[in-house]
Image (cartoon, rainbow, N blue to C red; front, side, top):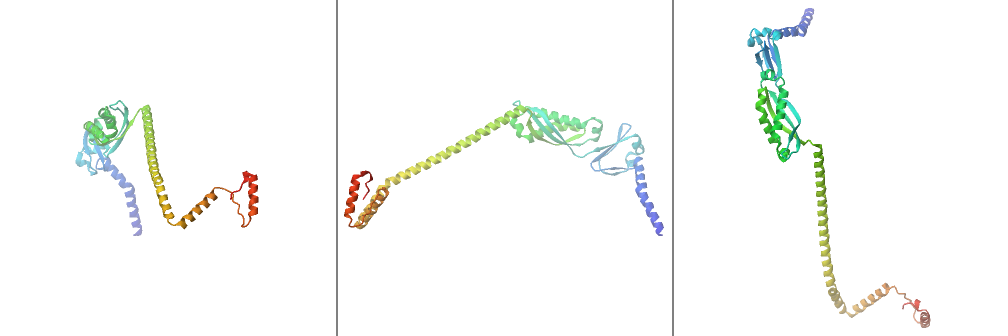
Length: 306
């Protein structure tokens, strides 16, 4: 029993691994069935005529759709499998001129998808290239002679204009145009770019210089205002100083002892600050005083102060 089980398992494995794919391949070869994947389309052509078009994904039995032609469609006919997914394209630097005569380049990005499989196969040998040429021509035709300011700013409106111009013609070749977007608008003349850069740099220098000069002027105005206010305050202080000093002297003069003591202090401070030499003599030294006086009379340049 165990040996029979392993023999049966091995036979099943060999059948599933080798025989089953061969059988399914033979069934597809004779047109028994066909599998269409997601976002794919199959166009069957026999003797120059379109026999069937399958656009929806799934498993299809070709005999029920084509009859006897399913037996020979893979031998005598053709099966074109098309990709129906959304595709994208980017056209760089399409040459246009602004209203002011500036040579401009426009980069345009657009989406496209197949809308008519038969037209894609039989109405145009290069539908993708024709669509690109159509978009390029529409861009040049619709966006030339626009004001430079509008060309640099209104990209959404420009994109809508190009899409409205291209869509009707593109559908005739089997392509449907999706979103269109102007991604880049630039100058094509290198010399013009250098001139614009030079003007921008000069303008920035002028603005920077004007800002610095305005700041310096503001600082000067603030400094002069501060100096003016300080001068006014100093003048006020100088004007009221005699009055304040006079009031202080009047208050001091009311008390004689205080006034006398103050005058002695002031006299002492004046004498000390004057830089004069002072000779201190002890009491009862009249002879020594006379001797000093005689020496001072003999040499006036070195007369000491008393």
